[in-house]
Length: 79
Image (cartoon, rainbow, N blue to C red; front, side):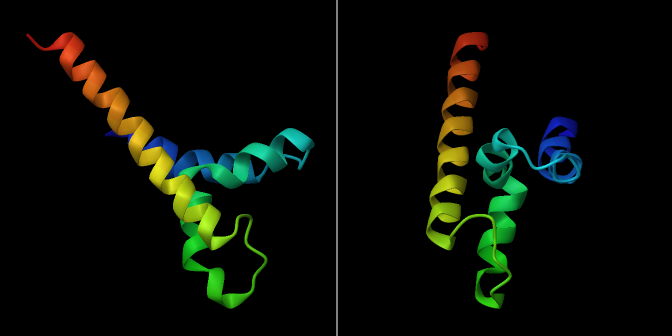
């Protein structure tokens, strides 16, 4: 649970404070907290980091990838 809260709450705040380099522009908009912000704030015209469609697809990709890793880990470690 600590890792989940770290990824979803702390990582986004820490990465948003870094200087905006090319690497930042191609990675930070696609972490889960920023994708959620892009979906939630898409109607306000704040110039969100990702479009609502890209944000929804990105969040779906996070769920699918992490779910597949969890299923693999469970099958591998559980008897």
